[in-house]
Length: 115
Image (cartoon, rainbow, N blue to C red):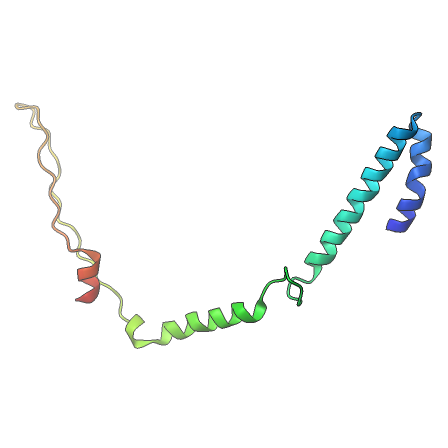
């Protein structure tokens, strides 16, 4: 189909344009763009091949297996417990016009994780 387009496009462009340079440019760009699109489609048709720009399916499977094995490890089975911060709400003292203090009582994530 691309070869037919390549053969008939110059004839159609001769009918549409009066200037040979514009006919050549329009023909060249149409044929060039369609061939480029075809080459791109051929490359992405099989993304798991052995070309340089293909996706590494074996490497992706190995990485997925490592992540799944990590889920079975005893060290990763423990769920961390976080302490809810006890907060005091900042209340505006209408007589003084200053904000009250906002205090948090919380542990760090590292100390919670190692406990």
